[in-house]
Length: 246
Ligand SMILES: Nc1ncnc2c1ncn2[C@@H]1O[C@H](COP(=O)(O)OP(=O)(O)OP(=O)(O)O)[C@@H](O)[C@H]1O
Ligand SMILES: [Mg+2]
Image (cartoon, rainbow, N blue to C red; front, side, top):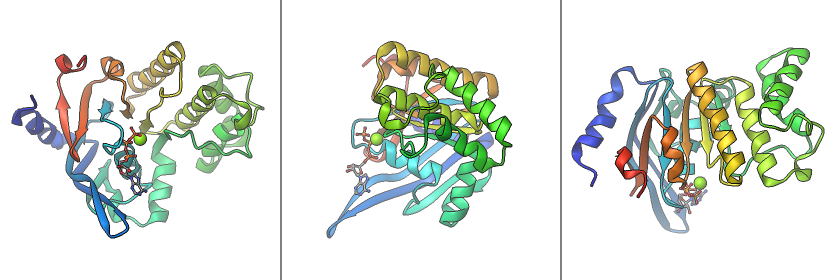
């Protein structure tokens, strides 16, 4: 089903790649046993591409996004983003790089419970050095965009799962990162809300030339992707449009 030519194509894109994953390997230690999750994985992503990352539960999608964002470090291999190799940096430098360049939408939202919705969206803008007035205006604008303009004063525990996810999306988009990593961004949303969120993410790529890697179980999402890859056995395989529906 997945011929050699597919993997050749993944590798061939290296020349003007914006994100380059080289021989990425990651395993987790459990007691005395080591379980391999990613095995010599390769991927090239061009600037402005929208990549959908498919894979069954436990296949390693979150693990891979955590390595691309620099939240976690590979056992070996390189994560090169815009010419910078994250795997070679210490944790502090990776955090600063992420804060500046990457918007991460977590599978479990990761909102700060002691901050209101608006303050959660404001935080990355302030960390980036925006003035108070400009940050507040932008944060409100992005809350409006995800349909939560009137919930800025609510704390996360007063919001439904889908609402928290939308705040997390506003937070990831607000500081206008060059790369957005989205881990199951529509997993907790009803069909209509999920569609709205995907439209916002898609618009953000098309209008601003941002790059997105979006992990999902949902093959319907593949429609909006420029390219679909699937994690199997620790490696990525390209999925052709005819395969989406299966
Ligand atoms: N911190 C950890 N310690 C040990 N094992 C881990 C850890 N994180 C993930 N794993 C294991 O690595 C594998 C991949 O997990 P991961 O969360 O990346 O999968 P996933 O594709 O995102 O799954 P899902 O679709 O359910 O979110 C799983 O078998 C999981 O148990
Ligand atoms: Mg996951």
